[in-house]
Picture 1 (cartoon, rainbow, N blue to C red):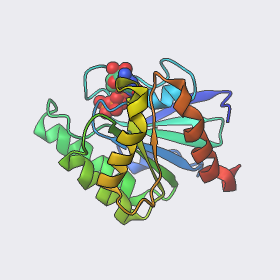
Picture 2: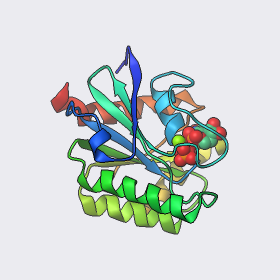
Picture 3: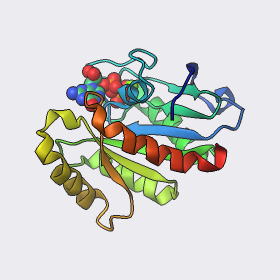
Length: 197
Ligand SMILES: Nc1nc2c(ncn2[C@@H]2O[C@H](COP(=O)(O)OP(=O)(O)OP(=O)(O)O)[C@@H](O)[C@H]2O)c(=O)[nH]1
Ligand SMILES: [Mg+2]
C-alpha cells in the first residue's frame, strides 16, 4: 500500500479529543524506546512525521496519524519509562488503558518488542492484556538490524515461543533500518484493512 498523503492529525489524552470519523485504527504498543514512532515513519517513508528520540519517553500522548483517510496509525507512549514521575506514569497509564479498553475503532494492535531481549515482566502483562481483549494482534520483533541476519529467524521463533506458544499470533521481524521486512508487515496490515478498502 502506498500512502500518498500521511498527516499528523491530533494528540489526545482523553476520549472527547479522539477523531470521530470512525476510520479503523492500527495502534502501536510497546515499551519506551522500542521503536513505535520510528515504525510509523518507516512504513510511510517519512523521516520526521512522528517524533522519535534516542531517549526513552519521547511520546507522551496518544498521537493519531491519518493515512489518506483510509486508517489511522495510533502511536502510544511507551511503558516502563522510569524517568517519568510516578504521578505522570499513572496518568499516562490511565489514558492508555482508557483508549485500549474502550476504543471500538481499533482494528489491530502492533505489539513491538526488542528482538534482542526476552519479553520483560511489563511486556508480558501488556501482551496478556492484549490477548484477553480479543483484538487482532501482530507481534513485531523490532530492531532486527541489531543482530546478524542469519540469526533473525531463530530469534523471532524464540520470542514467539515465549509469548505465544500456541503460535496463533503472527510474529514478524522488523527494522527501521533494513527495508527487507516491510513488505510482510504491509501485507498483514492490508489483510486487516480489507473490509475498509
Ligand atoms: N537500530 C535500530 N534503531 C531503531 C529502530 N527503531 C527505532 N530505533 C531507534 O530507537 C530509538 C527510539 O525510537 P522511537 O521510535 O522514538 O521509540 P518509541 O517506542 O516511540 O519510544 P517512546 O516514544 O519513548 O515510547 C531511536 O533512537 C530510534 O532511532 C530499529 O529498527 N533499529
Ligand atoms: Mg514514541
